[in-house]
Length: 103
Image (tube, rainbow, N blue to C red; front, side):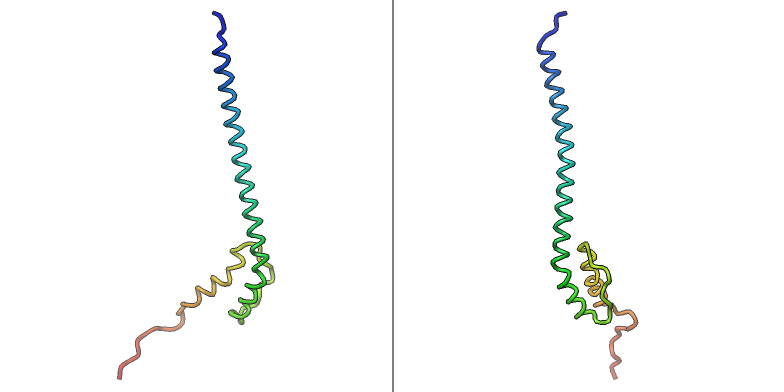
């Protein structure tokens, strides 16, 4: 049997397609890593920008609570006191909401 150039051409195209698929897969993972790093950096910038303002707000709204000793590094850490404040706004533990007795 005589080797046909079409066989070698199809083999070459197949190998190129496999190499391209592997390259895309590796670049997709690095693109995800780049996006996550960019998001982390942006979160850090936002926390650094708003942390002093939020500390002032917390100091005014929560005078009984001592200020945190650790500076926040994530958005969750930054707004945690605000969330606890919002949760305690409607908290009625210890009191009963009953209708007054009509006399």
